[in-house]
Image 1 (cartoon, rainbow, N blue to C red):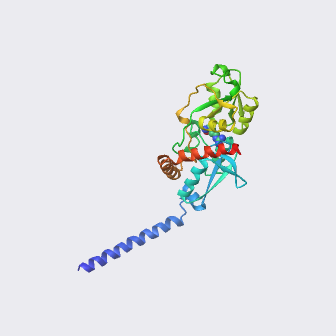
Image 2: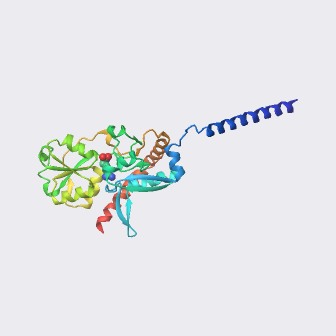
Image 3: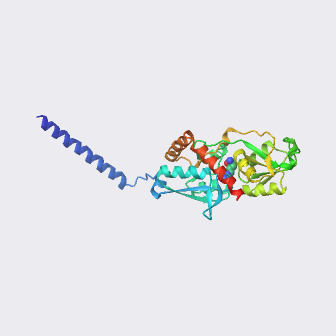
Length: 279
Ligand code: ARG
């Protein structure tokens, strides 16, 4: 009797399984339009395509590695670690900073990693990972002008540089409203202009400013306070609504923040950028 019951249950169970199976097939056949999410797509093609602007030491910059021009930096190491955890290769597409978010918008890249501040305005068009770094805004000047540029007002009418497409343009506009804003596409060019004196000052985030000051001994931080907003922290820009991708990346960033990896990447990249100029 007991045996019989078991047999009947087994038959019923098999029936249920079959029903499920055919049901599933039904969905597939009808092509119900269940498309893959971005994370699945990335894992399927086996490559994470990353948009960046490699002009921003120590986060992303170029250096010779074994005689070859290579993109390096803490953002680069961070993304490589993310690629490893997702089990995919990472490829970088280098472009001007003001093109990075456009490339993401146009799906030319899967994510954008470029010391990008997750501002409220950008959040209207993109999702962002949890922030991973938050340096304050700083003014950089020539050492010889140390005694001249001592306050916001001392820069009135002066040329203050900012990278084109960066939030530093907004910092100049709102916090140095009487200065003359000069927008320049690449950070190293901003530095050249400042060294030459064709601009009087520039705005950069502290860690980046520190790296370029290390590489350019005639430059220094101005002793002028700027206000930094809390929505300026760096985060990875993601396509909107790709929650699975965001969740996965957030998890990895949380680990890398907690175990000190991100700070380590920044420190190492800073040393690498400094070494660059010594050679
Ligand atoms: N954090 C600033 C912004 O998001 C500047 C980023 C510039 N990044 C770069 N790789 N040049 O606007």
